[in-house]
Length: 135
Image 1: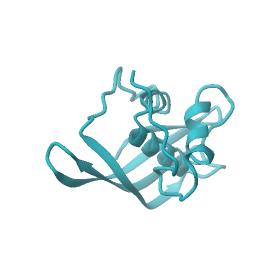
Image 2: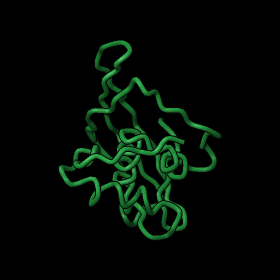
Image 3: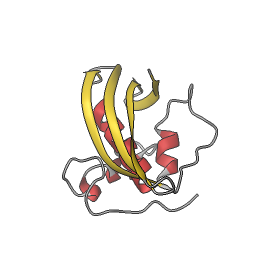
Image 4: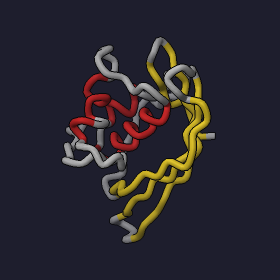
């Protein structure tokens, strides 16, 4: 697997440094050290994982019931901006939730902008949030 790149600012759009925002989730997944406290934070960290090319985090933060065996990222796509449109539940005291978002990207091969609009479902098991699927 390719080594993820490490930007200065977090791709999730928080305005914080990547090292202080989503990167700790990427480094701590599965270790019990650092996990996303809400469905939205997991969504943001997964978007950042797409942006930096962290396939390991994307797969381990995907619920085992819907996780693909492998995942390939298109090297011609550069993720540019995440906009959270809304959430339903998914808080620190919930065990499920949804996050509606728009992820904007640049397609170098097609030389055009694009976007992915999705309403994603999440579940929390044993204290860890997992992405389940798009609704």
